[in-house]
Structures are given as structure tokens and as C-alpha cells.
Length: 195
Image 1 (cartoon, rainbow, N blue to C red):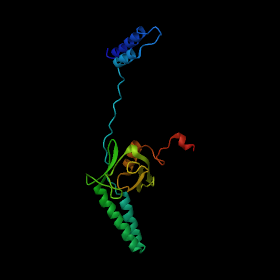
Image 2: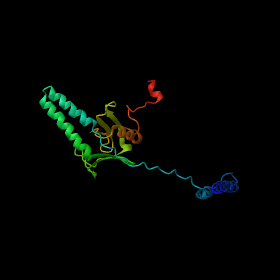
Image 3: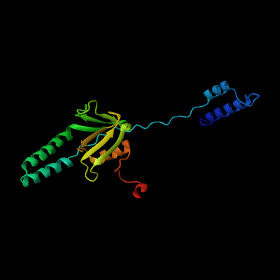
Image 4: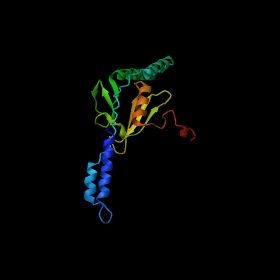
């Protein structure tokens, strides 16, 4: 019965318009506006809110750096081994402090669960997905860096690089879902395979 009411309203409005035609065969504009006011309005579809997701920390990159430092030390390249080893330790500490938070509208970086400011360009470390112009994983087979460019910070675009100290698969899937595919996003559509 509910679905019949709006259709009856449309029928009544169109019948009223046809009965109110002037001698010239047109319905006066004031009458059309009044009848349009009473027409049932189409319902707007409900917006689905995506859940907030925080990828879990990962230590693949850090373990690789420590292993490389061990090989460098074995070869006698001590200064390089110290640098590589310290970088691995620093990224291990950062993995326990830094969080990528993917909420419904934006990507935000939190430090120890708190909002953080960007030390390079200033402002809050939060970027709306709609402002992303490009993003990539370097290297897709063994992701080490997350790169993205956004136009929220600067109209001409601001580039950001982050070491991938989170679960790479989770971050990749979330970036594809919320920012759209990148140039290297897989799987490719069948049309891309022909190019």
C-alpha cells in the first residue's frame, strides 16, 4: 500500500495539470510549481560508512635491514653496517609508535595514538582520499616505501613517502579500496593486459 501512495500522487498531479490547461494549451507556471511541490520526492540512497581500519605493524623491512647490516659487517664494511643496522632499529621502534589510520574519509597518521603535525610542510597529518592524485608502492613485489601525492596541502600537489612498517597487504588493499587503483595496482583489468 505504501508504494501505491506516491504513484497515486503522481497520477493526481498529472491529471490536475491536464485539467488546468489554458486556452493556449499550456499549464500556468504558478500551477506547475504548486503541483510540483506536492509531488513525492525521490529518496536519496543511504551513504555507507566504511569502518576505520588500522593496519597492524610489520617487521619485514626492519628484519631485512638488520640482515643486510650483518652481511655488510661480515664483509668488513663497518660504517655502512652500523648505518644500516641503526636504520633497521629506528624503523622497528617507529613500527610500534606510528599508525596509519584509514577512516571513512581520510588517511591519518597518528603517533602513539595521538594526532600529529607534519614536520616538513606543517599542518595535521590527515589527507582526504578525494585529494589523492596518485599513489604507489615501491617495490610492488617487496614493498619498502608507500608514496602518495595529494592536493590538499598544496594545490600543485604534495608528495609523501613513508617506509612500509605496516602489513603491506592490508595497506595495499585499503589504498585500492579508498583511493582507487594506482598505476601498478593488480590485478589488471582485461583491457590493460592488451596494452
